[in-house]
Length: 361
Ligand code: UD1
Ligand code: UDP
Image 1 (spheres, helix red, strand yellow):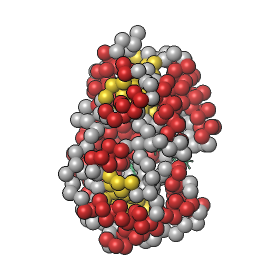
Image 2 (image 1 turned 180 degrees about the vertical axis):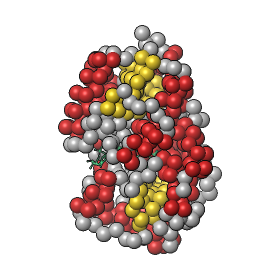
Image 3 (image 1 turned 90 degrees about the horizontal axis):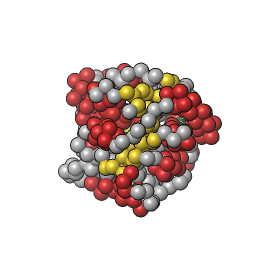
Image 4 (image 1 turned 90 degrees about the vertical axis):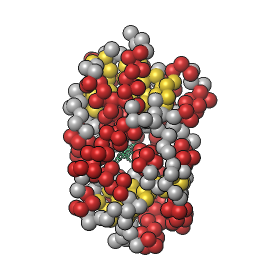
């Protein structure tokens, strides 16, 4: 069986890392196709180095563009590689444009598609990711759902049950495999003069937040309220999209909000695990905060990770300043007793077991 692992952005590199390691361990015939949707070193190279991943056999250097142009370039590049390599299965993870194009190109060539993190729904088609998720799930042959909830969403949409496998989420593998290393190696708290549990950690990058001036102003005002009330800095490793938009909209950022460049995984895990609370619109960070038992306030009106809310580790705040402050107050009163619902940290192994079990040829 020959496997093509398609990835292109920061979260895909992190969440595919355990499957890649498992393929290496078992000497599986596999290769990595990197679309380079993310190309800045701090969104790309740093993760290959830190996670000790093999170099991709192909790098399409697609980069940034509008949705249509980026997706078109992805499709063209991915199809060429798939035609040349003729893998038995193409594996994609998550909901990015890379995932959509990978699944679409492979399925049209009658190459089996395996979708990791299948069955997530925010029920908001304003999110480009929601469209990517729905299409990818419906053209996939093997759907690796992280939770029973995700599985039941897929069943409700008419996807046959024999295509669906509940595996847990590979993000747990990544957290468990790197946390001890992070504790040993990361010097980020010292470097930024941060004391454990005496800062908030913030990330914002969703298109519907970063590209909307009113929503971005709401978030920045909310962060200022939170930082002032608790007298802690809000440390914000800022995605380049958001940095650009703050400049373009000429927004002022209060000095209590410390904008820093995106950091590597070991540093980010260290920032997460020592934060008082995390405020984010990221999917992966909602999961990681739940896993690490750090309270999370989600800067959105919906989430495709409702399990984190049901577990008690997350709350939807929206983007109004007072809504954000209220949500922080509520989450800080909670006892950190929740258990995360994303599995035992062996998702990568389980997924490869399943792929080997399923007769592809
Ligand atoms: C993409 C995914 C999103 C995922 C996120 C992970 C889609 C539709 N979106 O969003 O689901 O949560 O990655 O971080 O696939 N840029 C750089 N350097 C880079 C990459 C991007 O400076 O390496 C800047 C460019 O100005 C670019 C903007 O960020 O226009 C947005 O990049 P893009 O890949 O379109 O979307 P993300 O916001 O990164
Ligand atoms: N992350 C990181 N450095 C940062 C910000 C995030 O390593 O400066 C990691 C984080 O731990 C998580 C992943 O990136 O594993 C989340 O990616 P992102 O928020 O970009 O995308 P999403 O999960 O929303 O698709």
